[in-house]
Length: 275
Image: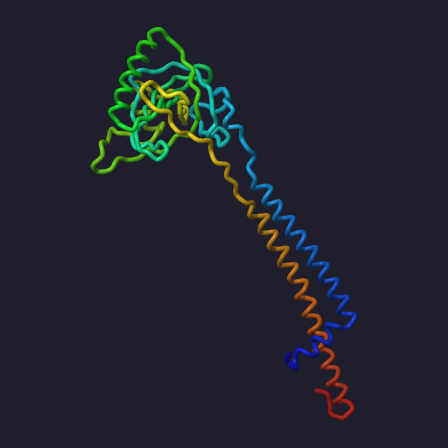
């Protein structure tokens, strides 16, 4: 222990400064509890309420045509009725199904049980593109026959927001699609200028004949901390540390004051003028 620190320690153990330390510790504890409370609030507010995405909901009221997809609708299982539009079916390449690349067959459904609008429906997946092409031809033939009878269908599946168009590479076929981009689909759907469209698509729970079901798991429940509460918690910790530091500085000041008073008294007794 250094000689310079001994006066400080002797000052710390005086009853007056012990009482001051108890008070400083109490203040620091209160600040620490407030910091803990702020952290708990940050964690509580970060918990995302579970959405019943696996409960099949009517499509009507979930989203609106020509409007962005709300977060609450993303990943929701839905039931939607409408009529197929033959000839608008496309293939989307490079789609993974449990890690295996393949091709989706995506059809055009005109919604009938909600505000009118075009809605892409992914009918299923095939590992070989030839199998997907064969399924597309069969589907268009059936959809064309049903169109004459104005036959409505009901589709159950998971609703997902529209993807961004992906530009083909230098060696890629410019006609091949790699994403379910509504902005791109309406350019290939026959006569679909200035008509309502839903900016999302449905992955059908039941695949079309010759295709496999698309693996479409429920969305992960993500959470972000409320960083404002975290910042407040850090502030309270700083305040708690400052309460202890303030007590220490007051002790140091008391030691310096006693030392100066002792020097003045010694100079006065020796008859030395005080500067």
